Amino acid sequence: MAASLAGKTAIVTGAGSGINLAFARLLLRKQCNVVFADLALRPEAKEVVAAHSSPSRSPARAVFQQTDVREWPQLEGMFHRATKEFGGADIPFSSFWHPPGSPASRDAPNSSRYALLDINLIHPIRTTQLAIAHFLSLRHRSPSPSTTSSSTTPSSEPSTTSATQVSLSNPTARPLSHIIHISSIAGQVTPLLAPLYNASKHGISGFVRTLAPLDEHHGIRVTAVAPGVIDTPLWRDNPEKLRLVDDRAGGDEWVSADDVAAVMGALVGDGGKEEIEVSAAASSSRTGLSSGDSQEGTQMVKVEGGLILEVSKGRVRKVEQFNDHGPRGAGNTVGKMGIADREILEMVGLASWGWVEREAIHEVGMSI
Image (cartoon, rainbow, N blue to C red):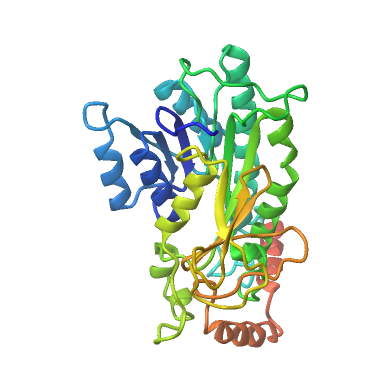
């Protein structure tokens, strides 16, 4: 039986808004301390941190650690802050069509990297390395191993709580540490609009599955959620993306960030869960059915390393590694995506596409 979240500490990257802010709120409600690691906090996130700034105001505390997840020393700084404030962490939680150097690109032509991949793929990989090292270090320091979980970060058991060490000689003991990542339905499908984003989420899903054996052998459970189209500022504050959503009656539907956060809470042991209820219709194409719908039925799946759960509108589904039918139904569609596809194909048909980077690099070389 998994332990309660109360008294643990989580590092949540990207907690300044969206899904990870909802997850941070859930953790705080469960009396779990949270390090908010982000470049900045939106007003609603600032309110949450302020409301949990001291033990006198809340059973759980929240602190903000300004973090650029592209910079590895700053990722290490998250763990140092968690150790300083709470004695450690238990739960740690990144546009192709505008080439580097073009006005709409965030990437410099001479940087030799894509910011989106640094944020969505490289930072979770590096944070996972740091989290594993942090968990193992805590266990070696204390006779009572710590339990950790992460959205890209870890959390640990209080030192007064004894826990069973997972090892090759004791493979059935419950896991002590959790790392949870955010993948996406874009880790299953391949819309033309976002090749780098798709690649990053396919990478996260593969990365999570690869680390599945750590659960049994070392008590470090790495899992992920794969949300559909989430009602967050990443969509609402981006007119170019928002115009692709079909908001007519019977059109696209949003998935709540709170619904995703609830599934994340279950994955890290909220309420002592070692199983989670999901849709039983592996090949269902019906839409809008909740996981408890009598037509679709439900099944219990074991929470274990490598598990990826798709979260759509009123529905949670296990994403199979092989022969998975992919995301379907409400909360998984962007009805006007064809508009973007046509615009991209027309743009790529221009003789000048992709040459911005080469010209910029040539200019840099000439100046040197």
